[in-house]
Amino acid sequence: MSDDSSDRIARHLRSLALAAEPGSRLPSTRALAARFGAGPVTVQRALAVLVSEGIVETRSGLGTFVRGRSAPATRADVAWQTAALGPERGGPSPVGSSMRQIPHDTIAMHSGYPDADLLPIREIRSAFARVSRGAGGGASGPGRYRHDAFQRPPTAGLPDLRRWFVDDLGADGWRDTDAVIASGGQAALAATFRALAAPGDPIVMESPTYWGAIAAARQAGLVIVPVPRTDGAPSDADLDDAFASSGARLCYAQPTYANPTGDVWTATQRAQVLDVVRAHRAFIVEDDWAHDFAMETPPRPLVSADTDGHVVYIRSLTKSLSLTVRVAAVLARGPARSRIENALTVSDLYVSPVLQAVALDVVSRPGWRTHIQRLRRALQLRRDTLVDELATRAPQIDVARPPRGGLNVWAELPGHGSDGAPTDPELVAARTLGRGLSISPGGEWFPTEPTGPFIRLNFAAAPPERYAEAVEILVGAL
Image (tube, rainbow, N blue to C red; front, top):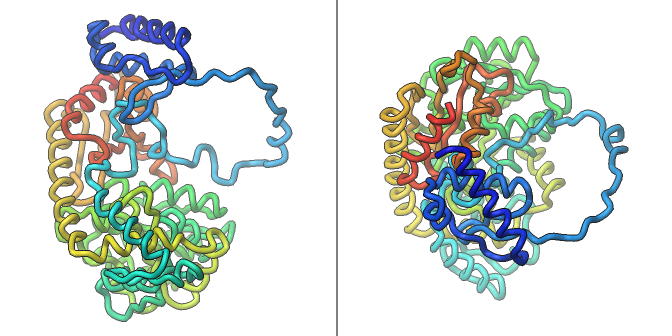
């Protein structure tokens, strides 16, 4: 469908919106496609134009509506802030595209979270009801949360929840007092970086790696020392050189189902990395973000082999439970654990006891294991479907290692377009967004210059029946 059709649809919607009252519902995508003989991608392109103009707004699951029109107001003169604030510590645009808001009906393969259909929503609702009753006068059950926890919440977190994280880890020598509860994995990362390093200190990171860790390190004023992955993990030689040349005492890594690549360190690689960290008397922050998204029996976390307090382990339940339950745990030993608790207390005071109790209620019941098994099968199906669609419809896009866990496919685009120009993932992502598909360009996952034209596709965030459409849009954008 031509751009002319998209323009005609946009003009039609603009005239309807300007004649209607604020809050009025506009025709559906299906109705517009039928009226103009256009495809859904063409309609989405027209809607995106009107959303960018501030004329309409899309509401997920409800449709498109006319935005309210307010009287012009005198804009404040805030130009003085440019000089007052000085350089941005986090660098330009540190927030990744996975946090982007997108128009209704756009295929959301940029997201950092799974689709609601993959979450235990019913169990979460039941847990909120049980916890609400318990908060009013005591309760018993799997979580054994008590009334006094809602009056005087411990800054380190509910003891029973901390004990669950330690027990579920299944490693010897850990106690519930080694765990600290945080309001999600990002808060845990930010507090850990602030606690274990000072502004100006170096931090070693795999490249590519999670954009949120890159942003947290930069906001803490740390200098990132990138180390490339060699066969899925940093080599012990490269890691040793990074520590020795920079003087770093802190490293961040994702040994299991790394975000964005899906890489998994082998047992040999884990042992070699831990040996290097010990030799340099350093800390390694293990981000076990995909613990609940394994499609196979996952390897033991790196922290399981740590006996001397070198590994700081972070695990979040937010992605596997619900966006409304931002709960994570940090496991650490010795003074490092105390510093991390202090950093979390200064920034957050404590995590909501209600959310902690809800998380504990869900994961403590037998249905949790059933949910994890069901989730594993659903993720396998979605991964296989997307990889097959890419192989069939877009053989020029390379998926070198289909992930064995996590939520994402890491793909390399062809180096040059049909016109001979180098492929720009940012431009490709902008084109796909205008055509109804939101993806994550690879550059934001590198703490230094990208090594190729990569993109990340979240197969867990969009329904499989739209994968073929998504791949067609992607190919068209190339």
